[in-house]
Length: 519
Image 1 (tube, rainbow, N blue to C red):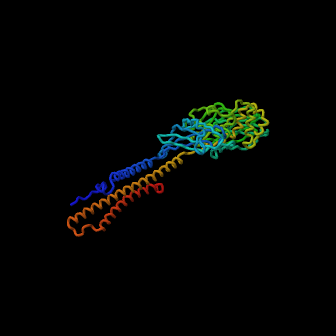
Image 2: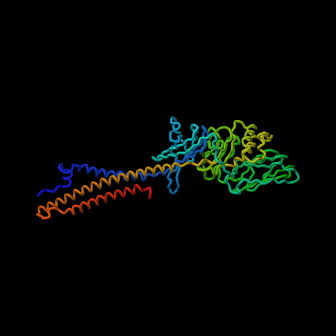
Image 3: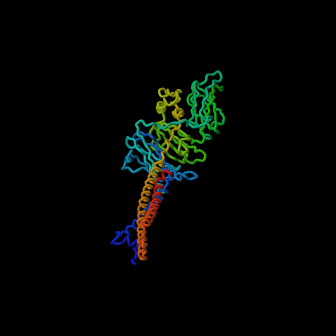
């Protein structure tokens, strides 16, 4: 009786099938390992999430070569129940063209400086005279972060939008009419203006009053206010009063008197800034300013706007500052704003400064010319051509009076652009490519493993049938060999088993490839 051949003999038989047993085993190992490695790579990529967000604030338009302020904010733990937190990794800033080429490749990207409010600030400058992109990059805990913001370079760049001081109806500036009292003539003007645009409760507030002719002494009375300083002598021109508002509402009445008798009065509802940063001290030409922090705040952000555009920014926890602290600012009109909110201009205190080397009547004339068309006619528009004597005598008061209407407005700090949506899109594209790659690897593994299983199964069927046939011959079975139908059925079962294994792999591949559609 002859000994039946095993499947290993069939694979390595030099007279029969090629010696490919080692090759087939290597294929099976390779298919299994590739499937395992692909699934592990997919698992690793799917676990990746961007839990930080780099945001960049910058003006949308600038003039060629004009410096401008930028601010970066890096938020992490975005999904935390207590909310995200600000971190301050090193943030580098550079300018690139539309194709992503750096406009100044020889210059090292500029780092932004961390501040007391956990923001990162700096001053940048447009490169060349064409539109470009600002690219900020950072790395936090091994995760790279980027954000890209468009920057239009225009010779006629638009200023930032201005908005009125935010206040309720009883905290807004409201000026009554002049009421004549007695028989003596009333001054032709009783026009008060609030320095800074609004008064912060419990902080001294300066009011400049224009008293017309004939001259009169002015007294102040009111509700929820105390008078810290007031002139007593009869005069015409500009009078400076220092008041302190107590509470969310305050109203004062200016009473003009002559010879001990009242001749006119005018009521003013003071504009009240609740929770705003107070900027006091200094003058309309500069100097040392004092910051009044809102309750619970120990640091604020200072912003400077030149020609209506965001020029410089700085976070500080000091109670005093000067223009020099904001860097090199050009002479001319500068809007100063101080805010406790890191992200918007709401609650910002404002001051206007006419930065000049000299504080004289010529400065007041130039300021009157610059502001001639910025507000409703009230008599000050003529100061550019015919400056009154009282304005010549007190340039600081005249400049403060001219600038007060503009101080009631607030410039909007540009909203930051977020880099997270673009990074999430790139991460999703990477995940999709990985899914398709893993699906392809599984499909290849399915083909190799199914082919190996089917071939080994066919060999096993042939060997089993050969053993049965040999047994029949040895037993003098008159049938001799097994019917062909048995061999076909056995091969069909093997083929179905191989297809089932392949189908399982392919089903997994399809689920992985289609994940973006169902998850």
